[in-house]
Picture: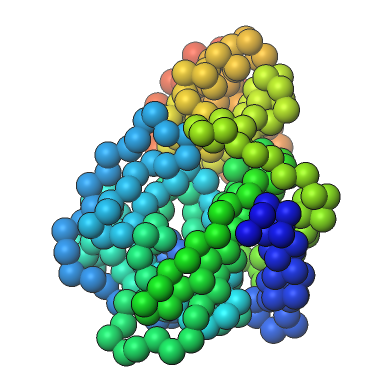
Length: 349
């Protein structure tokens, strides 16, 4: 199938089958493919007995983080939104050693099997080990009678890779991927991930984010501009020029810092959200802000703490927790060193 014919087929699938799923009046049929979330959810799943997967990141790959051939799963650096538009599949979600340590129920498992019925969307966050497409999407003993069709959007910083595949119990055929430019999708996908991981998210918010992601994908497919990547896929990671790359990476990092002040922040954690290396992100911060990553995070923590001390009646201990300090004395010392006086003195003045 030529890239142009594939584009038309994907556009038709998106309009006729995928977009209507996000527009249903009842609950959106969406599964978050995250091991600990699946374990707590009511979704059907089966744990496969085995040794939890050892993480050995591929530092030289701009797309893949890891690949476990024996378990038929891989992890990538970016989120994936997919839909089963015909038939039914079994989707594998790998269990890594770090995930197994967080919940004893996963300690002797290498992957879980999640059935995904027809007309269901499923979202896989970055870094989650999931089916690698090398085998059949069918893990049950019962024979599979009908072919399943799966529609994929792999969302990168500069756009998305899009393709579809057909899978039966005896045959698995994947069509070539095409890449389309749409920089807006990655921020929407990050927001969707955060909403799905939040236990009290509103259905209307999730529906709106899904419709926005699919709407931008539809527009890109309609514009007929297909990027042909070279052998190392480098064309997929260019955001138009070097200035745009650094600007977008900085914006992603700064947004993540602002939304996660109370969490543990390290250069590696922040850089992962910006889709570039910590060293490269540090250079961007120094060039544009005059501070390295952690100096920027500290300054934002202190400015937020000053605002809370000035404008609220929250206890100093609670304010410290809100800006990432579990130990009240550590918060007081760092605040005094940065601001010049203690939190109590600053509030009183």
